[in-house]
Structures are given as C-alpha cells and as structure tokens.
Image 1: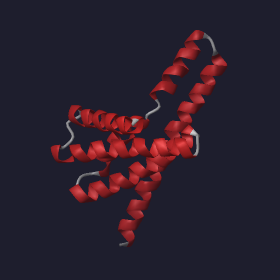
Image 2: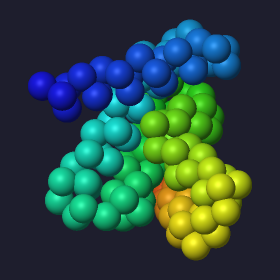
Image 3: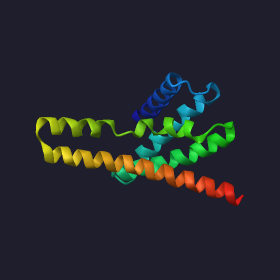
Length: 142
C-alpha cells in the first residue's frame, strides 16, 4: 500500500512542478507518469540492490528511455520529460545534510554526505547522457 501511495505522491509532485513551470498542457499527464515510473524504478532498485547510487542510476536510465519515447510520441523535446522525471531523484536531503554537518563542525560526516550527493548527481547525469546518446545514435542509424 505504501508503494502505491509513493507512486501517487510522485505523480502529483511532478504534475505540480509541470504546472508551475508551465509545461505544455498536452504533456502534463505524461510528466506525472514519468515521475511515477522514475520513483518506481528507484524503489525497485532499492529493494533489489540496496545501494542508493545504483538505484538512482537505474531509475535515471528508465527516465531517459521513457523521455525519449514520450518525446517522439507527443512531438516535444525530451528535455521536458527528463527534467520532470528526475525531480523525485534529486539528492536534496544529502545536500542539506552536507551543509548541516559542515556548519555544525562535523567535517568528516559532511564530507561523506557531500560525496554521496555528488555520486547521486553524477549517476543521474551519466544515465541521462547514455540514453540521450543512444537515442541520437539510433535515430542516425535509422
């Protein structure tokens, strides 16, 4: 039951960001679906692997593939779906903890949280770059 609530919450959150950032109206439903799929991929990765960075990487790969497919289907740039899809995965809490620990004087804990933040952000970037490059390569070959 909590997984379903998590997916619904991700859908509503991404839909809200899409409305706030004035995404095209015809893409709003798919933006929410992208957010739910990304969070679902993260939860599956957490249950199977139990490593946050790897789970975020898998979820980001899923976001990239969904974004490319939805972009071709609705004829919008994939960036619209990518930006909304990564919102549930953005490492906000580790970034906050990094600053909190550093300001409190716990430099080693701050360094550890900072490295986690950078690894998560790097996993997101790398996965999106892989799927974007693969999509361009596939389009060029076709």
